[in-house]
Image (cartoon, rainbow, N blue to C red; front, side, top):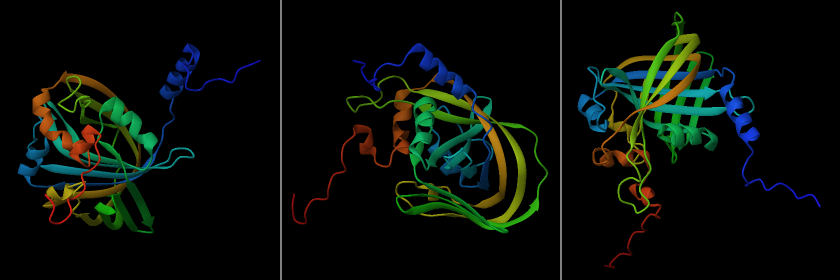
Length: 272
């Protein structure tokens, strides 16, 4: 009698190789996205950067809200990051990256250490009017809206570096299982359409995504465009666990999540 395959069983070398080959041949995927850049409080930028990252000469915040054209699997992807530098390398340190599907979280969080969370991400255009937002827990904590203006000259291919910290909270709830590492993720981008937007960025108060602490003091630009990119990550150094621990809460909605514990309910009135 032929037995049905046990799908949780080990895969063959051929199956593993086929998966690796397929992932290396992903087609160019284009996204439509709204990008806004603004100047904020330099002290706030300095406060959110774990060492060894440091602020740049410009306290900039960059939000990218995109609709990604995955075949049969459209994805909403967002990111809010602050400008940072590591040694001589300038780049961006993302604080929150909401995604609309679980599949988009796995590779980024587990491989690169990206701060991805499930959320609602929308990009809408009606004629010249454009509206984009990132929402979680019923709060649209970032909203970009405005009117599309003139087309902009297409930039040439560009390279951008994002900084991530990859770590695993310790099994006993104290510190990390192993030393955390700093990852440089390099993205090569190509743009096929770019337009200027006259509009505004609205930041709303959220205890889960407190981006309102990085206010818009001076709006640099808003654009809407179509782009494609690839990415390659590498570990550049191990970092001081004790120095990183005070920033671990950036990754979670509740610090108790690192202990996998339920939220504590409020005590009844009058109880001790």
